Image (tube, rainbow, N blue to C red; front, side, top):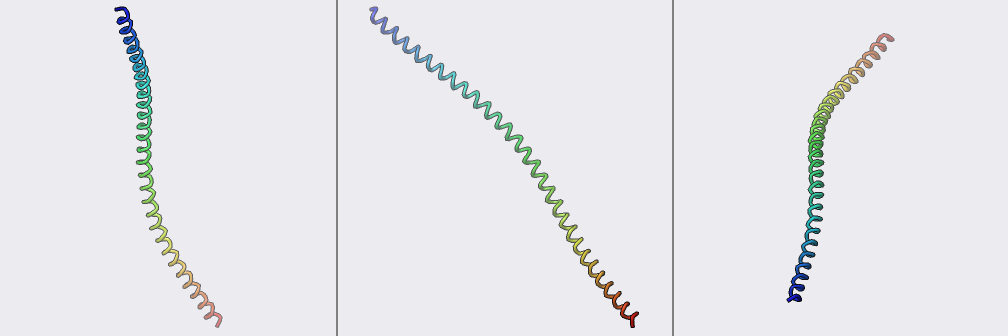
Length: 105
């Protein structure tokens, strides 16, 4: 009878050791899960900040596109004015030469 009780006691010890081992593994997994949750939370916060930055950049780029388009319009208008002034200058130089020739004659 003592042998049977000893065998049962050994079995319980083995089961107890297995349960202790499983407890340790479960504790390790809980620790890893806690770390992982922290990493995911940190990543989510960074993604949120990056999304906000991206929206700000999009707004800035949109404003710059408008400004560039306006500047192109202004440049085009200035180019036409410069052409017009150049033509006037050529016309006035031609008239001055004609006057100088007519005075010389």
